[in-house]
Amino acid sequence: MECSCSSLLSSNSMETIYSTQFSSFKPLFDLKSIPKLTSFKGISAKASYDTCVPKKGLSSIDEQKLGAADLVYHVNGKINPSYLTRDLRILDGFDDEYGGVIVDSERLPANPNVFASMLRFSVSHWKAKEKKGIWLKLPVEKSDLVPVAVKQGFEYHHAEKGYVMLTYWLPEGPSMLPANASHQVGVGGFVVNDKNEVLVVQEKHCAPSFVGLWKIPTGFIDESEEIYAGAVREVKEETGIDTEFLEVVAFRHVHNVAFEKSDLFFICMLKPLSTRIIVDVHEIQAAKFG
Picture 1 (cartoon, one colour):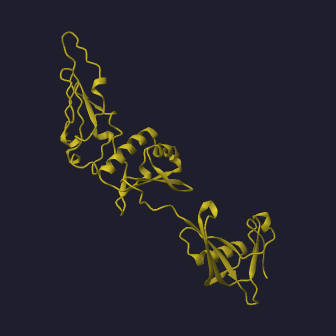
Picture 2 (cartoon, helix red, strand yellow; picture 1 turned 120 degrees about the vertical axis):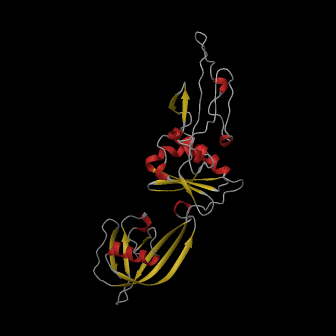
Picture 3 (cartoon, helix red, strand yellow; picture 1 turned 30 degrees about the vertical axis):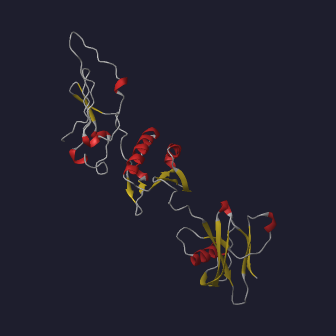
């Protein structure tokens, strides 16, 4: 592998030379803090520090990230791995269609200190590349990285059972990233049999003021579920009645409901395909056509 030396240090000159490819890099150590090397029996001790990367990568940090395997230093002619520069790497990720970056959550470092260094270096690099927003998904098994990201300016966006999503807006001015989901969607099944009776239920778990109240089967739609399919499913789960969707007969829209989110609720007219009621004993106290 061909290498390009980025710096040379000796006890005589104490001169640092940077290659043009790395001219934007800050020194990895303070020369003033290095003690003067002592000579023994008239022999002056010298040490040279050569940072080497493949020439293929000198023109683009994106294509050839700086990693521990790419960086070495020489002490008295011996090659040793460089631990001074092991964290100067870009976090793995890919561009989104809006000029932002989505960090690869499956290739995050486990060590919080290493993550902090890589995140700081990555943010600076992406800002220089004029990227827009950064999306950082941290799985629950790496939740100890959350305070590290928040300390560096990342903000909470949303959370699910297995992860938390954080964001960072790089350009000056207000963030243009889309906000978290603003609504939850509920459905109700309005089931009328051939006797013109309506299927109603009593909830097992409800506020004291609603105990004994008869109502139509209701619930929330699942992720990626159609509204009509959610209504059919809820009726089946709560009462055991199979149904067929006919039409949406009503809906309502209210705000500041659960966790200050808005709520959409759709009532679907359903045709019963069975008559035997099988109550979900975990959720429903009673059910009937009436």
